[in-house]
Image 1 (cartoon, one colour):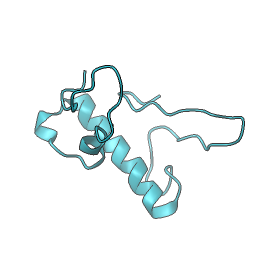
Image 2 (cartoon, rainbow, N blue to C red):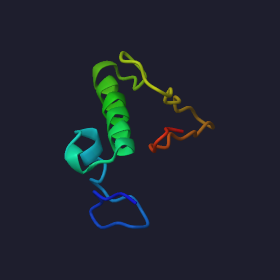
Image 3 (cartoon, rainbow, N blue to C red):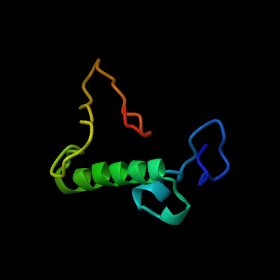
Amino acid sequence: ANTLSLGCSDHACHGDELFYIFQAFWTNMTDPGRRLSRSMATYWTNFAKSQDPNEPADVQLRWPKMTTGNETYMYFQDPLS
């Protein structure tokens, strides 16, 4: 369970990702939470820099490009899948 959750136990709440993206409250995170936070911040920063979440910084797992008829998903968990 996400100890930083805003009260949503069975679904994702809007804003729950902010703790991870902005690497906030690290003292309350476990090591897997910190790894998840680093990954999310890298993908978002890459996208802001290049419009591609996979570039320029190296990423652990390539985020698949969305194409019509190919709806693949990235699951942000530790490890990424």
